[in-house]
Image (cartoon, rainbow, N blue to C red; front, side, top):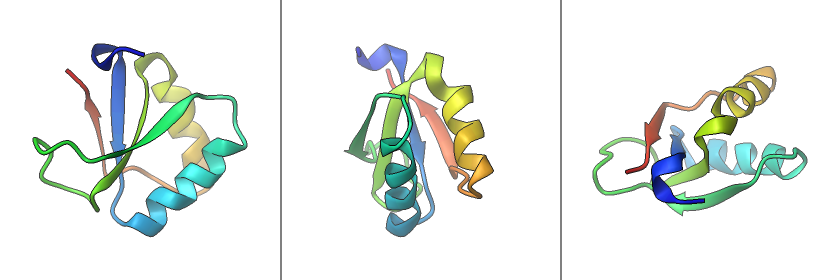
Length: 76
């Protein structure tokens, strides 16, 4: 994954981020837990990086489990 093809999903809390990580571990999408980039002045300090092409599927899956990202930011 190159950074221009990725999205960082930023969550309200570390707890919510780790819940999302647990859910995604049981899914088929590749992801990486990352520190929130300095340019993003929101969230808890942790984010989940996914491929842009997976964003809709990942967000729909998380929404089914009542976990919604605070923000999705394209990584440049």
